Image 1 (tube, helix red, strand yellow):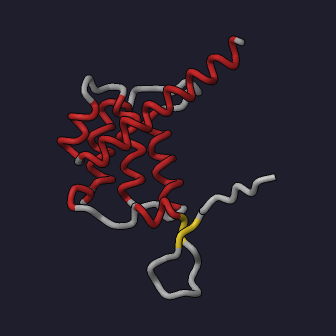
Image 2 (spheres, rainbow, N blue to C red):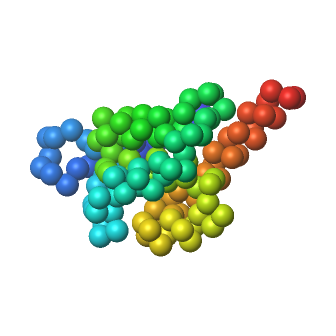
Length: 133
């Protein structure tokens, strides 16, 4: 039997002997110029688009994005990661999400938001197929 061990953590750039930092957290810890105030800007950008929207679960989309951002903050996620939770939900309300988000937040945020939205659609389709079949 093969051992499929994942690499869940990367060494922190600080001295050895400190707690290991998950790779995703470490990878997003650096702040890029377009990420300055990204969390507040992303929430302000998304709020008018998603404040009145409800998810399939009945949860308000803005409340959900707030909760995801809070969870990410709790586990040490950067403001950039937290900001992405708002941009992902805003994507479906934009006719050209890649272009609009890239202009306001940069290409990295746009790609993350659009690709995450695509993954969410695949997940929804898989759930629908399971319940119908």
